[in-house]
Image 1 (cartoon, one colour):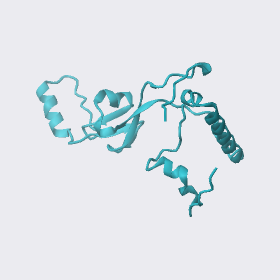
Image 2: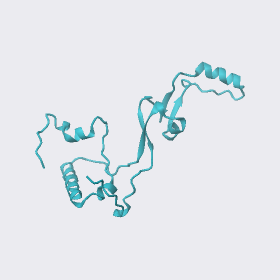
Image 3: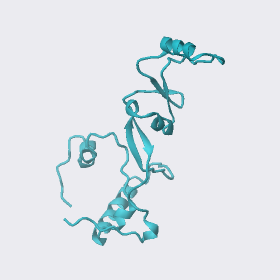
Image 4: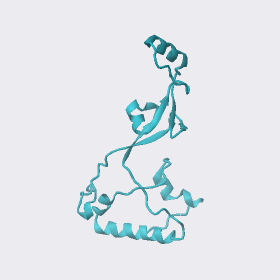
Length: 158
């Protein structure tokens, strides 16, 4: 282990740099891939994880976390089916709702022309979303399940 110079602000160290400019709060490590690494690497990794766990054993932590493979999308660039899967409603009519039961297409077109906005307002769970916000849609995990330790993926030769 090398003794790197300590940064002026301890939170600006190598981990902060490794996360780059992302706002990610967690690093998810795939068990299948870690179990496929050489034993010596696994021993170092376990030692680091145990050291981390011991160092913060006094801090309350969640019992479990739910991790879901996903794809990231910008709200205003999503198609209607994607918005629906994400539980997002696009309001093109400024909160107005067409409620007239018996109507002609011409009456509906007039109402729409009067109320339709240039860009929708997006809502999820009653909260307005910024159209530039990034949201996640569940996806299939491309890395196979660890299958009780039986799945092995050969690491790339270095």
